[in-house]
Image (cartoon, rainbow, N blue to C red; front, side, top):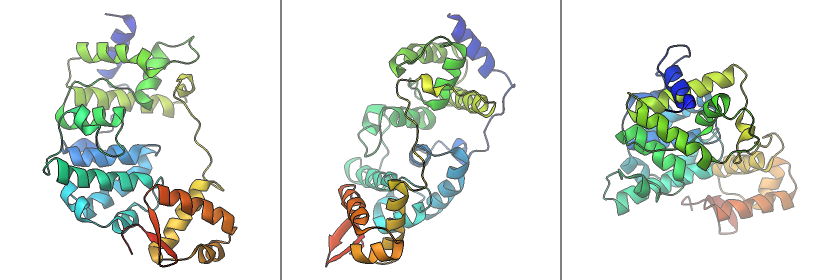
Length: 273
């Protein structure tokens, strides 16, 4: 067994870092609820996600309930979490589960990955946490642990170079995959709170842009206005005090994302016409 594998297993088996078993998605094996958490956690801090996760599942407790809902209602519950495309992806995924999988959540990672908005990591994380599948994957906290114990001199590492380490840890662990990954993520989060910042060593790392004054902020503001009532781009420009060309640009992108449509000379949330 490689030393880094031994080191990681020894630490994960210990109690030198806080375990986040209080997180609500840790208390369920329901794949739909775990998918909701994974989609919400994309580019969003854990502490911000918890109240949105609870509110979302109160409104849409099952994939079937979400599939029956209108997108406008989904976006209303999602408001404040950001990256609203995720809400549409989740809505589309629920409809696909109902229509293409007969209402049964797929068990295999490859099948889960066919759901809208679900990539390689998310599919394998859902399979591991919901079905205890021995999937091998990497995410931000797992990277931090490996970089901290292994990649001291490296500048940029691709996730493909980390997967063999994850596979070895998984193979030699005496705990179930869902518990191992939970502890691994908890330890990585603990390292970050202690000031360890190593994800810049990842070839996949991109620095998140500032929200204030960004196109993301403007898109969110436009959606908030359209959730109140349909509007023209001129009306949106007036209410948001932004140039009409800026509003038009973001409306075009929101239409491409399937969040907004133009009908009867006004823009509205898709499905709200």
